[in-house]
Image 1 (cartoon, rainbow, N blue to C red):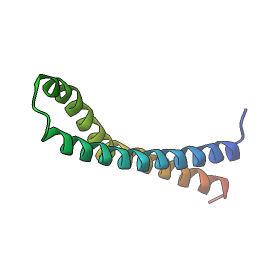
Image 2 (cartoon, rainbow, N blue to C red):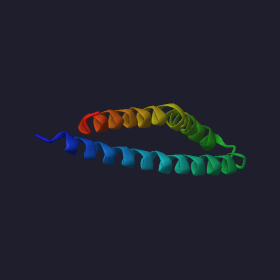
Image 3 (tube, rainbow, N blue to C red):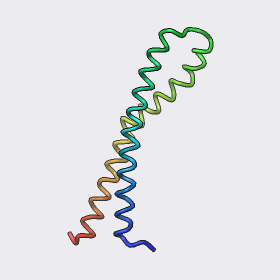
Image 4 (tube, rainbow, N blue to C red):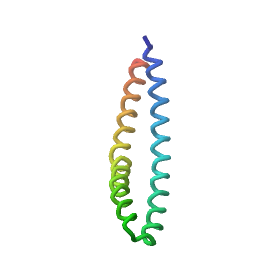
Length: 91
């Protein structure tokens, strides 16, 4: 069984990894959106319509995650880490 100190350290590592993942995802999503915009103005055939049917829901999901879910997850972990730290420090 892990001690609460171990739990705290693992949570800190997870928090750091999640924040890094979210930042990298923001950059990748922005680069993908830019490339999509550059290409979509040049591509107007049946294949582009099929592509957009796949791309648009993906872009919407990424946007929703980055705007709403990612900040909520980060805040949740931040709150839990703060509470656990206070408990471990006897506050």
